Length: 87
Image 1 (spheres, rainbow, N blue to C red):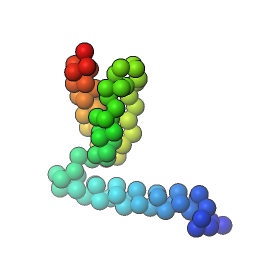
Image 2 (cartoon, rainbow, N blue to C red):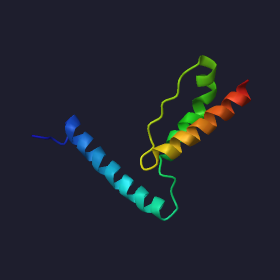
Image 3 (tube, helix red, strand yellow):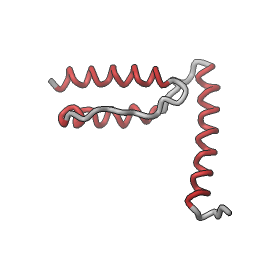
Image 4 (tube, one colour):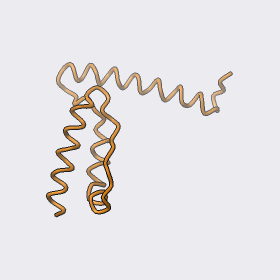
């Protein structure tokens, strides 16, 4: 039995919101108004690239949603630009 205060209930509730967001993003992407990935994924990456480069950290990003290739390409652009800036 799932209780409202159990971790499983919260996970199920979160999953429902994610599915709604994915559906909304799919409609927006089809209309040309969405990139197909989670914008905050790139925000976090941008804020930490300098430190990652300094420490030699490999970048793994999960947020591609409907367009993982597009997010991977954008991430690569940001990493290359960051490397050039921090050299």
